Image 1 (cartoon, rainbow, N blue to C red):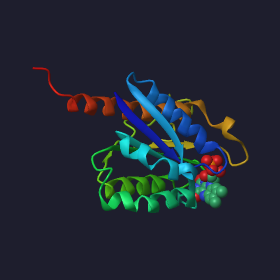
Image 2 (image 1 turned 90 degrees about the horizontal axis):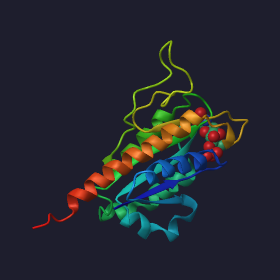
Image 3 (image 1 turned 60 degrees about the vertical axis):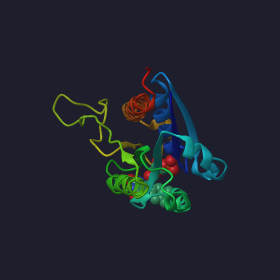
Image 4 (image 1 turned 90 degrees about the vertical axis):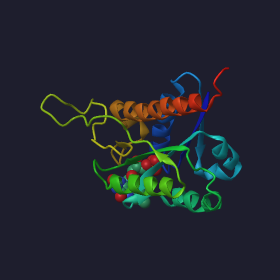
Length: 194
Ligand SMILES: Cc1cc2nc3c(=O)[nH]c(=O)nc-3n(C[C@H](O)[C@H](O)[C@H](O)COP(=O)(O)O)c2cc1C
């Protein structure tokens, strides 16, 4: 049994849809309990984060980095940082943006650095890049070709319904990967029968 919490911000619903896909992927691994928490509700949920085996962070890319509400959550977590309360939990991240590139790498780097400051163990995407050969297409998993986390994109003038299915499947794959690793770590914690 393991517990995974997806903590995200979304201004206009796109990252929220991706967060749901990450949670779906995590929940697909039997024995995994998943909570989805918006940073706007974080003050009711610090205990949930403390009890989780893994935290998956998600934010839109705004001005080449994490959104301001997500950064507010990061700064508020300093009280946890002081006691290294999340040390040795698994961490992972995802970000959504309007441009294909949009400087999402910088956002993932911010999420990674945040997790490192908390003493967490970063889980990358673990998928080969798609859509980068003559046989590939935008339907491929990891169509944007990132490694540090799940990168997703949709046009600025369209809603969350325009997020490609391949991006949502990529997000599901990240959630499932974190869930499998969390279950493996949970098994190792279980006492060995005499
Ligand atoms: C303040 C602001 C800054 C943005 N900066 C970027 C950016 O740096 N790169 C990019 O590709 N898109 C940028 N966008 C577009 C958003 O990433 C895009 O609209 C995304 O779908 C928003 O996700 P959300 O609906 O979860 O808030 C920006 C949007 C806003 C509102």
